[in-house]
Length: 166
Image 1 (spheres, rainbow, N blue to C red):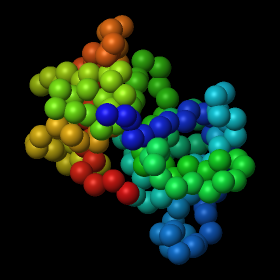
Image 2 (cartoon, helix red, strand yellow):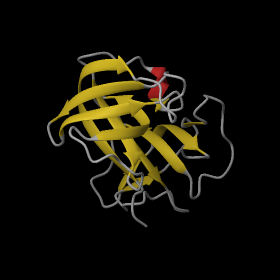
Image 3 (cartoon, one colour):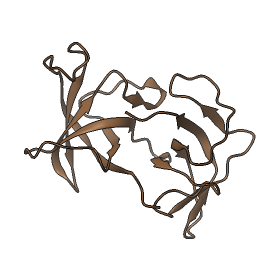
């Protein structure tokens, strides 16, 4: 199973509201421009349904990681424009990954195995507790340290379970 999601990390250089279009939520989407060491300049479309970890406000100068679908259509423009499913501010000691996890809670790319414990907050994007099965779910996993094995093993502090993807 391959990962269905890719990420881009960069420093925010501009934030602006997007003009209304047929796919826009009445002009409530934002366009965030970042400069990424690995991707160069990129534009991130942040829609009202985009999950922002802990609802942390994003400002110019912040470094963020944004996750987007590897299979979603993208306009062939420069700078590239990604429709973001989830985003998080980069904070020292905090790792964040969005992926679909199998029955053993191994990520789609096989590089991370989650071992939730009693202290792991398992929630829906709206902040409500989730008590269903994690098998086969797309989740945003937030964790600190991990082992150096393949797959790396980590105990997440937060698991955000996405039941439907947009």
